[in-house]
Image 1 (cartoon, helix red, strand yellow):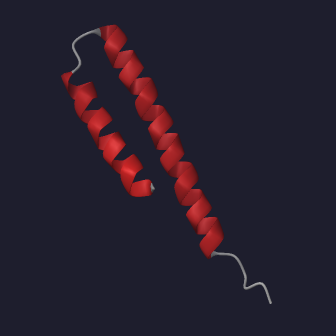
Image 2: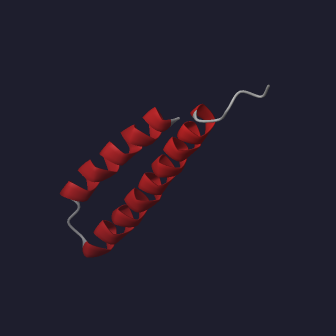
Length: 56
């Protein structure tokens, strides 16, 4: 899942570099921030799962 988010983030960064219109740049920036937040949440969930103690 995080791999897909990483790809999406890289694509949004590329779009942001090539955006000409200020409105388009704001929209892409917002989408980029959402994708980065999703990545942070996914990484946090993975770390939380790995750091759990055994159930016994």
